[in-house]
Amino acid sequence: MGDARIIPFDGAASGARTPAPRSGRRPTRPARAVRVPEPVEGEVPVRSIDGRPTGERSADEQPTGERPVRERAEGAGPGPRRAPGSGRSLLGSLAGAVGGVVGGAAAGLLDGVAGPGWEDKAADGLAFLRRRIAGDYEVDEFGFDPELNDKLMAALRVVYEQYFRIEVSGLENIPAEGGALIVANHSGTLPVDALMTQVAVHDHHPGRRNLRLLAADLVFQLPLVGSVARKSGHTLACHADAERLLAKGELVGVWPEGYKGLGKPFSERYKLQRFGRGGFVSAALRTGVPIVPCSIVGAEEIFPMVGNVRTLARLLNLPYFPITPTFPLLGPLGLVPLPTRWRIEFGAPIRTDTYAQEAADDPMVVFNLTDEVRETIQHTIYRLLMQRRSVFF
Image (cartoon, rainbow, N blue to C red; front, side, top):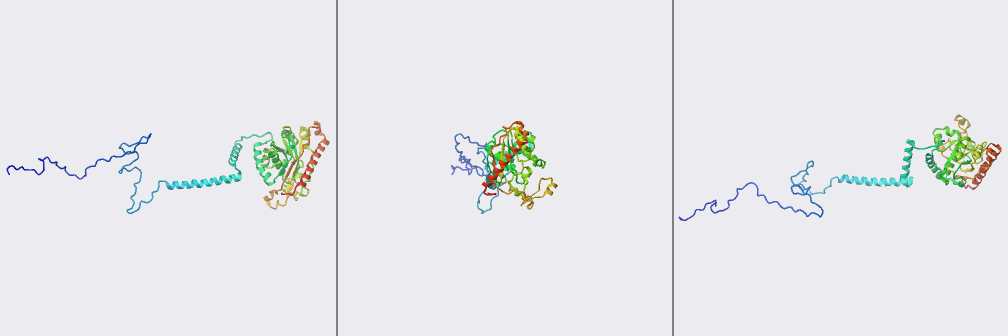
């Protein structure tokens, strides 16, 4: 018993490991190694300072300005997630699809109505208006505007081709260049035949020549009409203007019957009236240009004149006040011409350069040439009437 060794209870003498005092926290586990994917060849992986890939957020980080995600109610399923802005993108896609369909339909409609080249036509029209506003266009000494005249001919072309369905022949008798005088019969109550003759020469002659019309004083006294007539190449029917145009090498058109032919009753249709005193022949003799007879069939029936209110015509300072089957009974609608079918034929030219210069002052020479032109036109009209099957077809 005396040898007995006393063993302390704390185990200090035996070298036993004294346990560490307990604390409220569990010992920290070593950090788990993060496995970084192998970089693709040529690509440098970008990492943040604390070792996380760029863009990865820790659990306790909350980005500024973002709303915290609300916890789903207990027991609720996960449900589909909607991508941010998906509603707006869907509406945008639908709007784009609808806009594409409407735009394609509108383009197809315009192609069908205005033709396949309507974009170019619209651009040309806008450029034309811009030049009009800026005053960037040219006119000659008579006020003729070739660019505006082309637009007017394009507008009348629809009436020429689709409404009156005009057939033209003998254009080879009109010289390709140089002066010439076209002499035609006049009829129809309104001078539509002169405008259709102008379209025929402008559109169908190989040289696409501009026909300069000699018009009556009344045309230039009307508001707007006179200005448009000047710009489309018309000038006053007088010897001086006719000779100046012919001397310049222009193609001039004249209707020597005047109001007598234009306003004659329907019962006298296709019977030529007197050709005045032959002033157009004197102008042709002085300038030495050929005279081209022109016969028009179909214009007499567009406004069949069955009466003339002379008293009202004098009050309005008009050469006549026509009564037709549609005017004034139908009011403004009566001003729409009947859709008759036309024929225009240009005859063989009558030369004047074989006459002496003083022949223009010889009444007998002027009368004989005037009568020759008138008889040529009258016989051609009779022949065309015999060949016509119907007034409208």
